[in-house]
Amino acid sequence: MSNVGQTHTRRDICLRCPQGCELTTVLDGSDTILSVEGNRCKLGLEYIEQEIKDPRRVLPTSVRVRGGIRPLVPVWTPQPMPKALLMELARASRDIVVDAPVAVGDIVLQNWRDLGVDLVASAAVPRET
Amino acid sequence: MAEANQTVSRDVVVIGAGPAGMAAALTAHEQGAQVLLIERDIGLGGILPQCIHNGFGAITFGQDLPGPEYAHRYAERIQAEGIEVWLDTAVVDLSADLVIHATSPKRGYTRIQARAIVLAMGCRERTRAQIQIPGTRAAGIYTAGTVQRLINIEGYMPVKRALVLGSGDIGMIMARRMTIEGATVLGVAELQPTLTGLRRNYVQCLVDYDIPLMLSTTVTAIHGRNRVEGVETAQVDDAGKPIPGSERAITCDSLVLSVGLIPENELSQQAGVEINPITGGPYIDSRHATNVPGIFAAGNVTTIFDLVDFVSQAGERAGRSAAAYVAANGTAASQSGTTVKLKPGRNIRSVVPNTLCLDDEHLQVALRPAAHLEGSAKVEFEHDGAGVLRFHERYARPAEMIVRELKAKQIEQLKAAAAGDATVEIHLS
Image 1: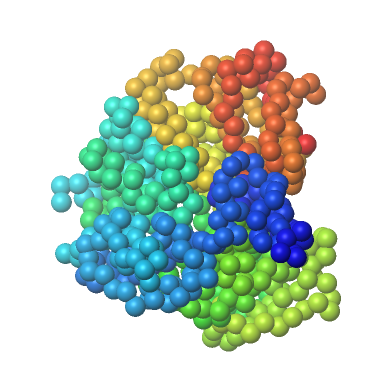
Image 2 (image 1 turned 180 degrees about the vertical axis):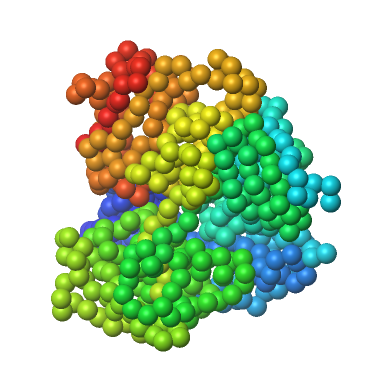
């Protein structure tokens, strides 16, 4: 292909740990990674490969609870979801109501949009007595 | 109610059931002490139940957990061990003879005679009044933690259109949280010329949600009679002073402040605990002992931490020390042994603990850098101008506390060079 010889560089901050290494990645015209610099460990390589191919993020939010000692339960996506769809799942989660008791690890929304993404409870909410 | 309006006694009383208090209670209990854990909220966990984002537990559990789940792991163990917990109970007074006054709807007013106390009350947020933003006192001026509590625990959405002041982690995380719940967040303004929180939060909270970061910017006025109607921002110069002519008016209904955390030490001061003006928390030694015999302190009440894992470690140490103090019963076993004082030097804002008990194994030092150094950073301990020990870090950033275990050899070096009430200065370059 005529543009395979052209490289471009991108700069990213790795999100895999609190250090936030600044990655400088050189790619060719077909987005193949030629080099990565700035990572202090191999998680940085995993991160940038994923970020270029299919950027994913965790969504933390809360959903309503019916009949519990508290009105909400915090939830999150332990398997990161497509970055572009974060606000769509955020909006969809506002309609969810779960019944108490809720246990840590309960799946409040399973396999959203068939993407293999679950919304999972991160706190317990006992039933109101 | 047999215990209402009485005096009771316990071995170790832990004040605050956040991560530091829970770890202290568990460890003291494991060491055989009779423990009472007192918490003013109706559940365990401290601030963690409202920290619904992930990023907790990388060191403690080797996992990336949301705050509530991290707290849940400790709460389950406390329940399983049958440790006595008083929830919905506020400690209102504390004295140097280890008498605690507490009040709760269930028990009324109770006096507790403790044999050792662990202070684990955490911290509070700096307020609008403390940073003196001119303008009205309309509704809609919140600290970020208040908005976090209102949204995540109480189930209210108190904000429609907000400006966040402060680029610390809480500010960035709440900018994202408000956006997730449908608010418009106009930006995060930051007085400093650089980000004050973690860079990964800049990406996953601001960039990902199209929230602008406005550096070298502050809020110069708040407008609105009953509710905030708008704020004025201005660019600031190198000295942090607003630059005339750079003012901008921003229409919003909320100003969310993330402008610093302050260790909460009113009770500590009531008991005569000496407070370090640099950290805002008690002076502690490496056993977490304060100047009052039998009173120990751990976690954010001593200095503001970044990672909860280090708070849990501090709580464990304090719990162990409190139990040991009870067991030693004021005998020689509780003496500090050979000690050295630590003082922050060049480019170090604060160091905790302030005194190292050099006869102990496993000494950990936590440093708050005052400068940004990328690529490499050198930490040097000096006594009387001579270097005693040094170690290297990959970088130094004010947003990230440097936490280091001292190796046995380094402890020996300290003993040789500077023991017996000597002061060692710690420098960063």
